[in-house]
Amino acid sequence: MAEKAATDCFVFNIFIKEIMMSAPLEIETHPFPALLPPQATVMMMGTFPPKEDKRAMQFHYPNFQNDMWRVYGLVFFNDAAHFQMPAEKAFDAEKIKAFLRERGIASCPTVLKAVREHGNASDKFLQVVETVDLAAVLAQMPDCRHICTTGGKATEVLLDIQGGGIKMPKTGETVPFPFAGRDLTLTRLPSTSRAYPLSLAKKAAAYRAFFEMAGLCEKQL
Image (cartoon, rainbow, N blue to C red; front, side, top):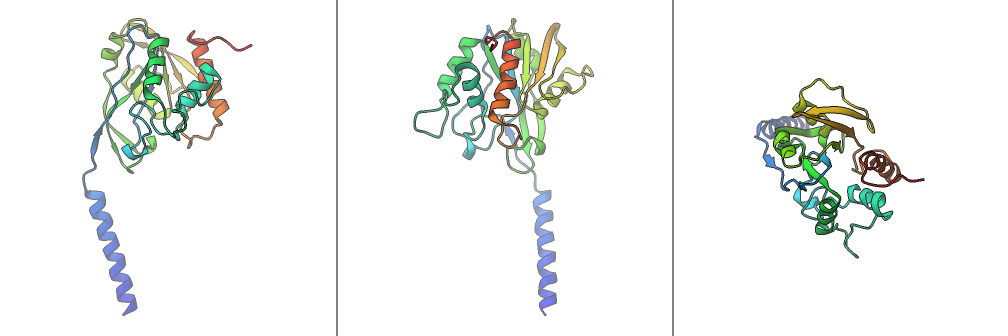
């Protein structure tokens, strides 16, 4: 009797798993528009934000556990908390946007529509449905010459869009990126997710090196 109950339970679990696997997954649209200052010389490109319950603001890299805006704070102000809301576990979206516009730094996703195969923000389980129209984006920023990606998946997507057989760069590496009649550069930067095994200081150093190369921050002595 116990063996039959265990068998029935096992069969039922398989049945439920098959139903879940056959159910259509939701196609999500990127919730935040690109920020494209017309005078931008640099564009930062990532993939997809976390689910709404993980967002601490309504802008790119909204998860308070993601270190992107701490990295920016360290690179440009030597203060990891520069873009944090006072006494809150949230970032100041308007302060960030104003800074990016002032410095001429664009922020644009590589992915416009996607399916989260595991329901989370992991790029590993992100099924890309629609990518950005890179030519249309660049047309709005005639002075943009440098693109940086914020992880491996964004780099893969961008190389697919370019379609020129460029070899996948290593983290921290800069390669020529000819596109739409422009001689651009592409730099693959480390992910600022806490899941990426690199210290905040080393991530900030990688981003600083990129912005120094692009002429947006002074070289440290």
